[in-house]
Length: 142
Image (cartoon, rainbow, N blue to C red; front, side):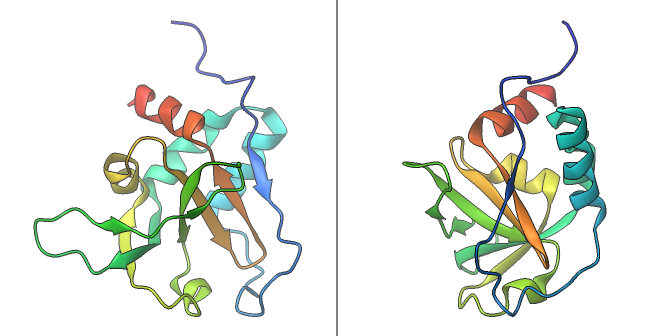
């Protein structure tokens, strides 16, 4: 198998036209740095190790019961006709979201998230977006 690179799928930063006041953290996290490096090198694989190791807070529809799968709170994806979950490394970035948050590792999220659902990662100063094609690539790379 050749190099693990997706030249046809580009990492797109999520550019907020309006940054809500609750997203005012300005530090750069390891995950955000990985996305920056990925864009610079046009190689989505650079994000995977950091994503898997990162603790995320993911918005869910209700608190999952012991032994049950989470009920993901889906929102419209930036890609028309698709849906995504919203996640953040910083729980306080999601305090104004009136839904429960599930604390999981990126590896757990990749495993539990249904195929076809995308991920929006919110930072204090913007965000990143992982498409379903990129997620399929990550799942294949296990």
